[in-house]
Length: 256
Image 1 (cartoon, rainbow, N blue to C red):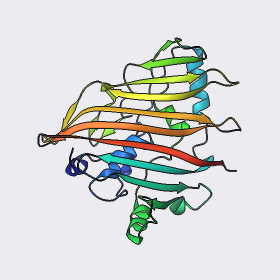
Image 2: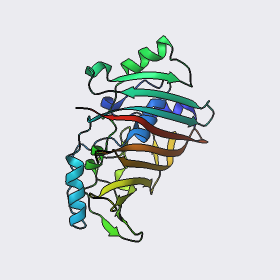
Image 3: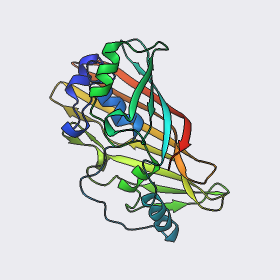
């Protein structure tokens, strides 16, 4: 997938970003590595059981700005060098200064990098609370692993997963692995897998999307993002390629 494909696939204006720099890379990474775009219409809740309802309530009660963290984002794109971005987030700072660029490919960021980062239009802050956008959707439950429950979602609610003007939600399955071992259950892993490809602007196509994310507990029991990985495969003008991203979170600190 060439760089031009990134230009063709535009997120809604609210979620567009020009960082990481050039040719739409940030568009994919923001969409894939950080979490899904928030649904415009809240999903209809039809819980599989009481546990799903309990989990949804705890997800909604989670503060998305309850901690500071450092995020490392790795992008591997066909026909382009591997890129590594390290950013820091602190909700105690003024809104314009909450995100700061720490390094690019292991080096101190250039003045241009910093400027682009500060101008970036970002979506929701990565958080456990983002699961509320779809976890209340109809699901089935299985208990095949001791200490865990798995919820299966045949499709995502409309508007949850969008690429440009295309809504991939109806053609995306979700799976949520719930950890039952502690005092309170929480969603430990999530996976989204597309079931159908689609075309965009007549010359570009997305063949598959595979996104997974992990969550862990802070010492105070608050669930936080631990990392994510994604692969998007497609083609432009008949040339195939893919974009891989991985995200890790560290130096997570609760804030008042």
